[in-house]
Image 1 (cartoon, rainbow, N blue to C red):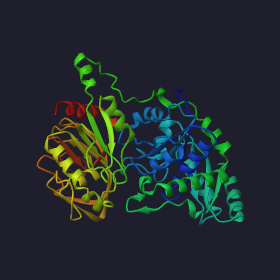
Image 2 (cartoon, one colour):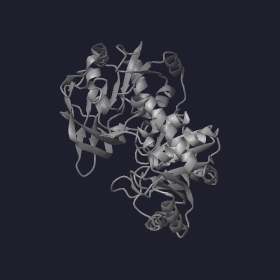
Image 3 (cartoon, rainbow, N blue to C red):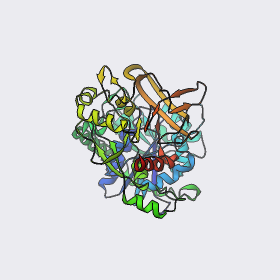
Image 4 (tube, rainbow, N blue to C red):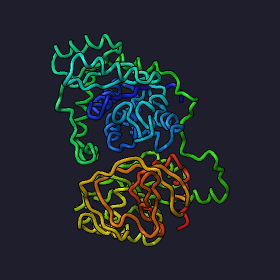
Length: 461
């Protein structure tokens, strides 16, 4: 594909300004015009990409310069955008907010610069008029390498309010590309970790996305937004699309024989386990696995022939009663783990493998209890593998992200999964036989050997 795919980054001065509404609505509105739209999200967020997928009919993908490194942002973007007419990238937090203590790293501005993409700033104008010009001017001039190509005014109260805002912005020199009135029908429900995932809302989520699309189509100049995206030019650095296949691996006869015995890797899904990066499944397939999804809320058995199990993040605490009630599957998971088969679990998956969650029985693979907590644990982590496991050799360094309101006691087993570096170093997670369970969400594209190692263990365990 061409490295000059048209693209826009939807950013804001702060969280809560309306980025998700505008980005999702714009994706859906452009798709309704017959364009193939590639959806992307800056940062580690798993929930917004679900709404993006509804809007575009394509998998929502993340661009995280901390988890994957700045060098992979362009290639991962091009991988996701293959075959598309235009790409829309939703930012994270405020435009210049990145990883704590790391300067611009992983901020929306950083990713926009890595992509050479123009930025559209979404401003909550509900409590200001002329001051909007100073705000927009400040964001547009803060970093000369960030091109703010336009502004979309959100939560505008009236025609008179709009008139005042437009007059003020003429002085800032940044064009107004859209004006959105307050609209309750486009709101999406939230809870302790953000928006409620699409998988839990189903029909309501479809209606919300349709309302977002209608609002953006009515209030924004789609032609001008398309033109801005098409002026982006080539992605800097001569990036080629990322591929899940290893560029250094050359199959041998034994490899080819193993390929004919593709091990089944079951990946947990459904409403309780919605957090997964698309690249993980692609890497597993490229490594020779047959990937089969299953729903721990409904399926009483693991997929036939399961040789390995991946349980990602999600909201098991919301579905703890249903998960506990599915005793046949809990026993099947425990038996698989007890056999020494590879099991990779992150965050929600860790909770599911515990002895109990909020007093209700879980799989009992780990001799640990889990419970909800008032305290939010949030942030990027720099980690190193303590010992060998089905995912990584001892000493492997990976970056991860924690985001939960639960506590696991004890927080690590006799063989921890990770040593977390930083001001308060600690060990975290569990490695026992074929199980690797941890609170850290990681992006395997940063270390493709993780998937190859996991699949190889599935073949030999």
